[in-house]
Amino acid sequence: MKKILLIASLIILFSCKKEEQVSETKPLSTDSILLANDSLAASLEPLNQIKLETFGFPAEVSGCSCYFSKNKQDFQDEKYVYIDDYGNSAFLKIDGKMAKIKMEEGDFDPDNFNKVIKNEDFTISIQGKKVNELEEVMMFEGTMTVENKNGEKTITPIYGECGC
Image 1 (cartoon, one colour):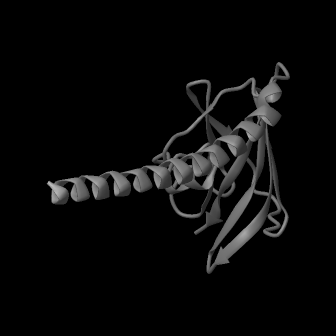
Image 2 (tube, rainbow, N blue to C red):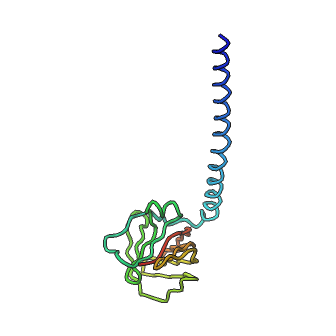
Image 3 (tube, rainbow, N blue to C red):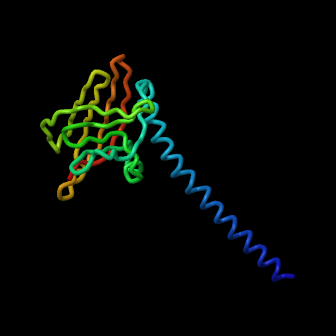
C-alpha cells in the first residue's frame, strides 16, 4: 500500500510540474505574438479598407521576380500579397480578384527599396530596406500601401525577396 501511495504521489507531483511549465511558457509566447499582432492591427486598422488576399505564384511569372508576404511565416508558407516579374507586370489579389498591373522597368536601389506602380484603378507604393543578400537574391522588409481610385487605402507590412 505504501508503494501505491508513493507512486501516486510521484505521478501527481510530476504531472503538476509539467502543467505549470506548459501553462507558464505557452501563454507567454502566445500573448507576446498576440500583443504584437494586436498593436500592428490597431495601428493599421483605420486605413485597412481594401482587402488584400494571399495567393501563389502566377503561371506567367518565371525567372527574375520580386515577391512579398505580410510576414516571414507567410513567406515560408508561400502566401504572397505581391509578386512582380521585374518590370512587366505586378500581381495582387484584391477583394477576391487577381489584379494584374502593367509596370515599367525603373531604377532599382537595393539598399533603399522604393517602388510605385499605378493604373486607372490602383496605386501601389512599396517602401523597404534590404535585410539580407545571398548571391543573386536580396531579402527585404517594409510596407506596402494600396490605394484605389475612391481614396480607400490599405497599408500592410511586407517581407520577401527579389532575385533571379
